[in-house]
Length: 288
Length: 334
Image 1 (cartoon, helix red, strand yellow):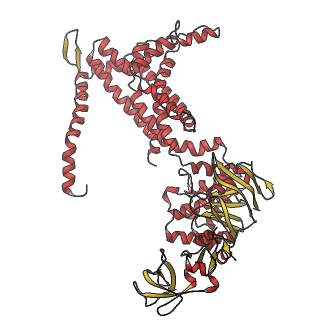
Image 2 (cartoon, chains in turn red, cyan):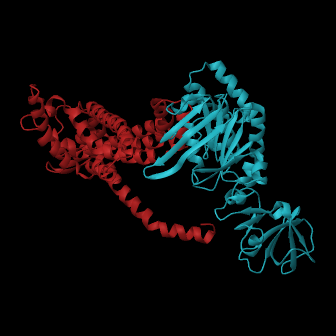
Image 3 (cartoon, chains in turn blue, red):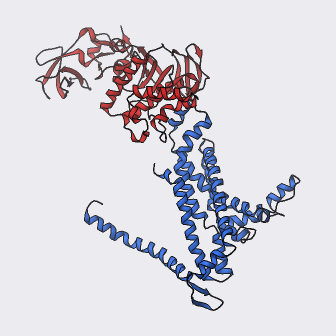
């Protein structure tokens, strides 16, 4: 890539990909912005003309807006906490030499291959069902009253389902990072008199810092838009309505495309605020 | 204090015996070098002493006390690893003070020892840098600093110079030797480089396949190797080994003679040969001489400026006093 000629050739070669990506991003974004400025009710008169920022004001002053933002942040934070903590723990375990390591690792990664809808259905009907679910049987076995998970602890249930799905991802990335740790460093720390806990805190955890950052950033991107798990389980009731779900309801249940589009723009803003905070907190780990 | 005694120490990895039962005594304050070809078990032996590996049999005594089952941190030994094993996310200061922090020494004492070690190793101006910002030689010094501050009974070095370039290696060799002079602490040093062994050691332990071939001072090993392996391993360039009629003439299976104990001459001598490759180092010249009836060329040292060249006929006269004779088992006939 040194000469002027090869540089311009490279630009030419990249142009189609860049163009495709731009179109891919810009068309939906423009359409969202376009509809957000209109009163557009597909089943009740269609396009009813420009309304300025009316949709934005209505969306943000709705009583469901702030609770939905709060729910979104609670679910994202909860899942991040569970997946990172358990992920580090699982990675530590899986890094130990043991019999059948390969099979165990594949099993650990398996939940990631299950579609969100399917896994939510399985959790809802086979595990969390208050009558036939496995948990209900377990509770009854110990003489306790079965918990109605999805109505009594709805947010916790969803966090549990989503964490189960994302734990393999976190484990996989953290395990890879764990394996790149120089064993001589651990031996040196051992000779220096560090207890196993001190070795974990002073050597292993700092080494994992970068991988944890990546896990948090990537998961946040995906978790801000979780939908299937809520749609299949609670349908947004019992306080599980996230911003994404609220937008879905505005567009499809209320048939108000304009209002939903305005919500979509707010979702973009929220995602950026969250990303900004995350980069401030954990982004410095990526420099090293 | 650092008197280390290995009593019938043995190590197996599963079915494979890495170190058959072995005895060794290391006196307090000695600089001992374990030397041998790669895979001879010298690093394993060091790790056994450090406690990073468990012995299969036998006992390790440090200052008279049985340390066989004592965990590594409690043995009072400090180790410098081949990869240096510095903690990359800590500054040099934190790296060096790590063992002190783990021992929960008070802050003032920590600072005093770190400053002292940094002064000894010329690291004072790098204390707030991270290992990634240092050169190879500086990292090596940080690793040594981390070992010094613990004021250990003995230092263990695992091929510490093998990642450095040739010039730095010579410099660090001197620094480690000087450090030993100053601290007078026992040091055990593992290397595959016989030059490092010869220049630094008070006592060399030559290992092959987990067995100790010979123990002695550098000059003892040079003058009186016990067998053919030691004779070939110690000394640079290697000793020449001759079999056949020349050996039979002297009642031996093999005879050996060092390149520096052969006098070359353009006109007369005991053996006749033809010069192959010659290496001119300035101070010395090494001729690789091809002799009829011998497959391997004989290396001969000559003065720096000699008027003999590739293809010339050369006559060689070995110093009769310095011809080593070996029997069919490779042992030296005295």
